[in-house]
Image (cartoon, rainbow, N blue to C red; front, side):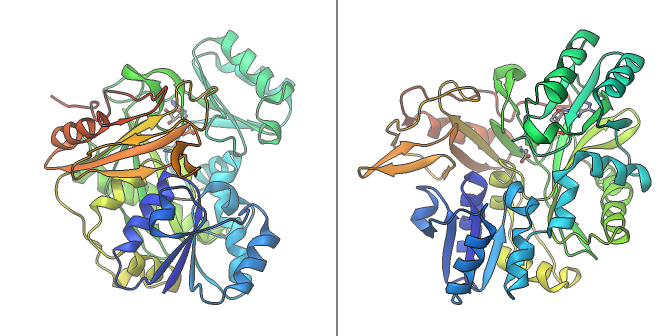
Length: 426
Ligand code: AMP
Ligand code: GLY
């Protein structure tokens, strides 16, 4: 099979690396890709947010058998619907199903209607009403722009003053554009043992009938060590989650995952693809923080290296609705991904810095924001590389990853030194 992956980042590079191991896969393509994906796939220079252009490309390339649509924005505009409409086989949800990520108001309504545990919330499209609600609830409180906002549309407000300013920013100043047409105002959840609350990401394959959770992982969202600094797209991940247990796994499957699949079916929005559950362990049990309609970035970078089963086989089973026939197996041990970012990220940073990569042992260097300029590997984004290592446990994996990081450099390179060190239940 010839397979095309849509997206440009580390997640897409990790998916391509997993697909490359499949005996079923002949040629790989990436739309648009980066310097790393170019090493294993043919990069295709088509704007994947232009549905017409994607359609024209697919019609002109009958040799491509299968499309994997990964990022949130092409899913939200219905690129899967477009491709399926011309008879292409795809991995990824339709526009109607991708709404579970594209609209936080929709996701909260769904959870309310089907009794899926999550933070209490209310949705508003009117500033005055929202302000009144915020004042009635007091702080701490969480404000979320309804639409896609590059992962930045969530404000955790510690004081009422912060909340009032946040509300103004989202609804009046339109800091996130149309994503702020509606706002979800949420109770601030607390963790069972940690402050801020302990979170785990569980990605799951689903064909709309069966749901199979993948191995768990944890993200580090803040820019600096000790969870200081601004929120980012993710500065590193590790797998598995240290506080995970068989009991939690059963609770999540029965109270959250299966009810979500059933709810989407009942709404006529059958979800097929990878459904991402961002969860918090609270004193009242596991609760949904967010859904994503896709693989997480950088969670995928630590989850897929642990997958023993052929990823292409799983993708096809999802497409064909026979996921229940497949037995999915995972490696023992742990995996860590340390993200190397441009200086200044997530605010302003320079592109075009030349990257040097020395000996990385048996680690995998995943490319996120890279390009080739004048024959040289250069930075081309905020998150530039992800160094992925496997080990018998998280400590062994992180030691390997950080040893490799020492041999990578560019002007302004920035990373966290504490990836993998959290939620250690002593
Ligand atoms: P989201 O984009 O919805 O994942 O939110 C980003 C981050 O904000 C989450 O990973 C949590 O750390 C935090 N967060 C979101 N909603 C809540 C909430 N209701 N209570 C506490 N923390 C939250
Ligand atoms: N790592 C969080 C996300 O992919 O949204």
